Image (cartoon, rainbow, N blue to C red; front, side, top):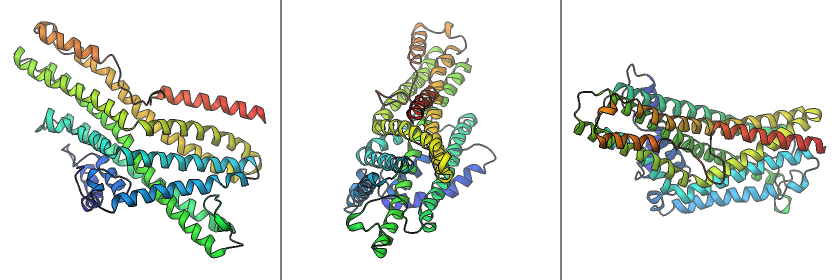
Length: 413
């Protein structure tokens, strides 16, 4: 799938809705067409933010990718230069929130620019079960879990896509109800951002900011969904591993040699999942760190500004509440999926220990069984050291630290 050309990726996007309806309307479980992350990668390819080996072989793809990266940097610079014009703490907080958001988008866009081939490798490795472990399986329970994961990822993608489109439209339409305003507070050369001095240049800046904003939001949307789907697919593979162990324990008619062959297949699958999580942590290292820092900063600023603006400017207070909810949803998606991976990885030891009559097997089988139990004692987590892992425990720690910082800022006023 990573070797598809640009036209094939567009075709993948075109066919997605039909594939989703087909899977959603099935009466009994069957094989899914492909994981949702393939379609999300196709969206990134379509908007020129996925320069992997195949795409960079095209002469114009890399220049377009650099153009959009530079455009994000230009937008950040124009917004950063305007911060000093803020007349009060509420306006400054608004500027800082947008700055952090654009910085996060640029960081994740550049991360994809540098690690597109690594992400391809991670996505390709998720096909290990269907390609190596059970190439021709028709187990209803396995197919049902694969369908569940596909539908969850699809609903999440469609819901987030709709919310981002509404958010983008609101950003672009809001200035039209205010005289001489722009979607973002920017400072342009020769005062082009001022409607009273340069009305035509002001409208050019308005169109540029609207188009850039929509493109930036689309970029971070699809990067986020690829990342979250990576965590969900890791959880799915751990669930399939647990099912394989349980079904292996129910096969009492196998000889020790046959059991050992099947058990070694499961052990290799477990090792593949461990390596896959490590590979994903390396591939998404920069985006994990950027996400954690940006989430903490934005939660602290938005909650503080909400309290300040509530007394003087209810409209701005509502705006900061929306920002806070966006960050909550974004961080909770990562942490919830990460906690599920941690939980399933520790359950592998219990599934292995529950194999029927394992104590009657050969010494070699018992040794392998002890090995998989020992290896499952170390939970699998999605983490970018030195930051904390993406779990619900980390989520609560971030909220507590934000509350403490909020209390300090409140007292300082």
